[in-house]
Image 1 (cartoon, helix red, strand yellow):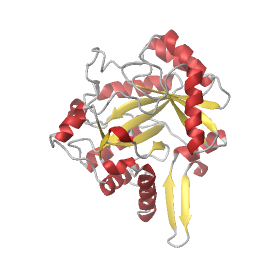
Image 2 (cartoon, one colour; image 1 turned 180 degrees about the vertical axis):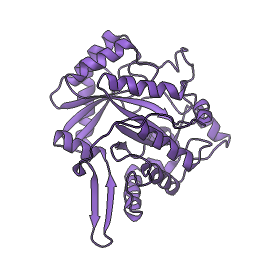
Image 3 (cartoon, rainbow, N blue to C red; image 1 turned 60 degrees about the vertical axis):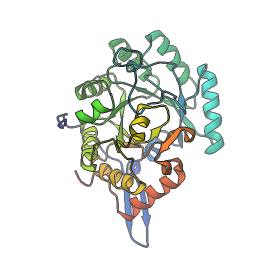
Length: 326
């Protein structure tokens, strides 16, 4: 089991306007959550939507550099990312967002695989094109901590002079046995180094973690959340472990090696994690979902609206306050 050893995060002053505060007169409940929506409204003055894009990269955990089978849960489909020229991807992604939610400002989000795993010249063209539209207010890049060489960092520093740059790191867990089981392919220290180097070039860090990984109990999940908060990451995405077709995880699930969480279990674990997160950390996501056609388990996760409503109702019922257990 990995121990929490990162230095304390930089001091951040919290503006109450950055928190989502819901009040009900009937019970006098105050929900304190540093949400993505409120953070974006504070920064940019409007609703902000993510546009899922693809850089066309592969991954060192698939091409033989680190591994050849990828992480155990990854189907390699990039289900929500568009493909083709960046201008076309942006147009397609905006059309999908506007059909569901309306218009506003956007984050150009390079989502699938490892989006710094390509020649820097290629990345510069892709990222610059994605940042070019006036209604794109930030660039977000999903990648691995071990794919941030000096040239990539120099590029991120350059891009950050134009608009905010966020780098999303797939940490998933701090626990060694779990990291080896899911075939993450890098040690915890590599994450810490990446956070420090990204801050050195002015990029913000969003860490991903998965709740419900086989063999982990709720306290171990909460330790991962606390570690992320102490590491200095500005944001976090909390995901539910879901089993997709065409993954090695699906084979494990089919053999009865583990079970997935029930909705109530997930919400309880989620609350435990949020109580261990500093109030400075922006919560970008409260759950995750895969393509319904590929979803094996848990099937309840396919009804995203129901899941989010249940999460919000539980947060109010339980008087959730982010950081209350620190």
